Amino acid sequence: MSQPYPASLPVSLDTDTSTEALYSKVAWRIIPLLCVCYIAAYLDKINIGFAKLQMQSDLGFSETVYGLGAGLFFIGYMLFEVPSNLVLQRMGAKVWIARIMITWGLISACMMLVTTPTQFYVLRFLLGVAEAGFYPGVMLYITFWFPTFRRGKIMALFLLGIPLSSMIGGPLSGWILSAFDGVQSMSGWQWMFLLEAIPSVLLGLLILMYLPNGVQDAKWLDSGEKKVLLDTLQKDQSSQSHTSVREAFASARVWLLGVVDIFLMMAVYGLNFWLPTLIRDSGVSSNTHIGLLTGVSSILAVAALVLNGMSSDKHRERRWHIALPAFLAAGSIWASTFFSLDPVITVVLFSLANIGLMATFPVFWCIPSTFLAGRAAAAGIALIASLSTLGGIGATYLMGILKDLTQSSETGLIMFAVCLVAAGLLILLLPKHVVNR
Image (cartoon, rainbow, N blue to C red; front, top):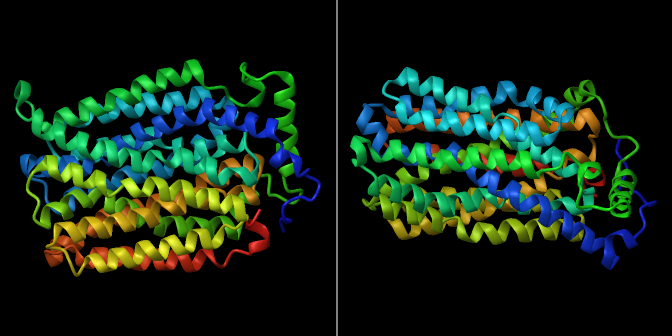
């Protein structure tokens, strides 16, 4: 069993001004680039929700076809998540993250060519294969630089890409759908897939030029700075952490976190894929206005994400910093079912749901590395992330089926609320002396 935060780590490492400046230097060098990459990645992954506003009627897809196609992304993602993270650890972050970004950008652009359900299914599956490993790869990469007690804030800064992608991508996608519809005999949704894929490819090339594989490869650090970073990581490592792939797959805590992540991602992807439709159904007809309102629902989530990560680091408490935001999101989603025809209340409640959802993730991803190290961390983090893709499949496919059967979104939303309550309760089962580091 893992031990509490090591007593041997000097307090000065967490308070010394020069050390704080060093970690600030590292964060500014690598996190903004990774955050921008995540914005591009997330946008390419969820813009299918906006494409649905035109694509579904243009191509004659049913809600079930759309839900299955959106969900097939996660099958490819799940199958290749663990192998991808193990390859990243072996080959280095620079080459592998760049490969991921360039291939998914190209495949995302190919979505503009879809004309049949089969093409839709194949390209969504291949997009999942291409992107597999990016998210857990970055989670692993952060552990190469920052000790446990600093990761809440750093995870939060990286994960700003989620709400920022909604804030930027919502209005952008809505504008492209309206402004480019009919240009060069192409629909707005086709232009959206093409234009929003370009940043991913360009950022992949930038990763190749800029991102170091780890502390030792950072040319902008001198030998003394590298020693401080490496010594801190060494002292922070628990002596009883799992270190092999076999141990990661055998760990009950890894599987529990995987189930929690499934429930969290059920709600995240459910809202991201269906929120434009829910806002439209509440009475908003303009695609541009739908895009703006979708972006508004994510604004406050930016502050909540960072503040919750910082609070968790400060108090060295992880479990309740996940459970309470999950309960807030659950209550907000449940309440939204009573106001489905009121666009103002709908946006307010989904804004609260976004606040709760986003606040959970930087703290959640601090937990695996409290009891995993080395190849176990690479495999365990990827396994948790791959299991979460079941949430994406469930969110998109089940919501589509339920809406086709009931002609309403309320049953699906209640399902998301129940999942979030379950996630909050399950996370409290983890022993606090292990995860509160």
